[in-house]
Image 1 (cartoon, rainbow, N blue to C red):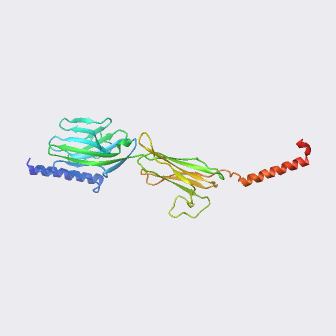
Image 2: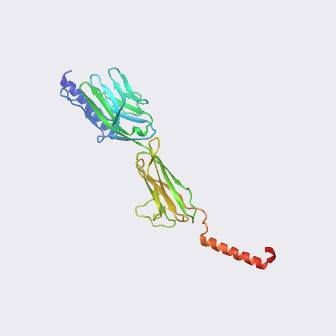
Image 3: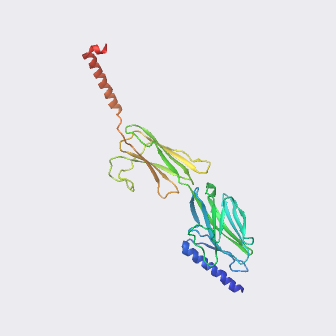
Length: 312
């Protein structure tokens, strides 16, 4: 094959790869990387088959990373690398000449050419190869940049994909019930989230109001001024996730009022809300208790005067 004909063939492969990326992932986010040498216009074409150069995955779930490339005429080496905090870790290496993996991290699986790829995976046209990398259940340490690199005798090309590992917080609010007429301290916990940060705020809705608060659509009671509150710093667990707490002091809980803890985190599009409502029978006030004690004292005195033998 003449050099011009081979260049046309390789360039046609690149156009097919671009068409594949546009069809599957849209022209905006499909990324084609090409290497050019002084002997050939194009040696290898590589794309990362992700909707964006960044992706998110839940903590504890299996991780799937994909790329597709047009293999060169001669031997090539495929590597999957991870960059995190300035360090590089080789997850997998594949040598086409030996037709086998030459290196693999524990639990990492390679699916080359579509064999064993997840159901529904679309294969690229024109002889391009789909490469799927399955990571073991994700941990916090998997958050970082992953590189798909193809090396040939005349050049090397690579593409970087940013993986964000996320874990939504588990939110709890104690006590779960408030009694009217009594003081209370609310305690809101956001546990097991990643990455930083979370925002914890409080809302108090008074019972009986019908005028909606400006910009609020969650109820017909206005948000009113809260009492003293506090917030802890971040605590880190052994698995790398974080926790944080906040508290609110309620001077006197009014019947029908509600108190909400709202937590905002990158894992959620909208804040997560946990609410406690003041319910139950109203407790007597101090004035009521003093009045009842006075009445009991008077009744006891009258009883002794009217029936003196009872007191003997």
